[in-house]
Length: 185
Image (cartoon, rainbow, N blue to C red):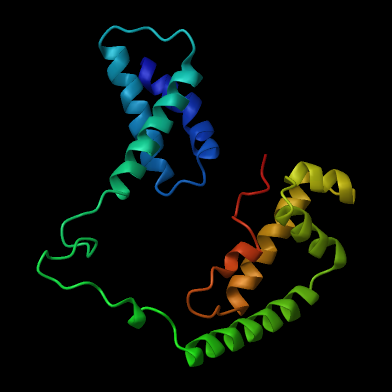
């Protein structure tokens, strides 16, 4: 087995777990491992594999984020020089739009609370503690559950909420639940 195959077999799963929140995590992991392979091909020796691989993956992620935030041609971020000053009054929501949005949010909250009430108090408490920043191990210790049970309950809750609720437009309702992996540590 070549050195790159050995690194790939040894560290791919760890890279996928470490950077699980990143979109295209598989591509990031492969690109990081290819960087390591190129470095090894140039005759470099790695004293400590994992720190270099993780740093390489972070570099790939940072580069992708930088590219994503650069305005592209035709993205609408730039305006022609001859265009007159933009009238911002059209961008502000009207009173009617604001009232409709408030009603939609209130209806969504009621639906959210109705679905939440279907879960057991322990499962509800898992969500509350996760939103307060506790990881799954801390929640498990507090509630007398296993770490896996906490992750399972939170994952099941997210699936039920996504299946049953349709959020109002422009509402980041998933923040009520947290990211899929906020509580894994």
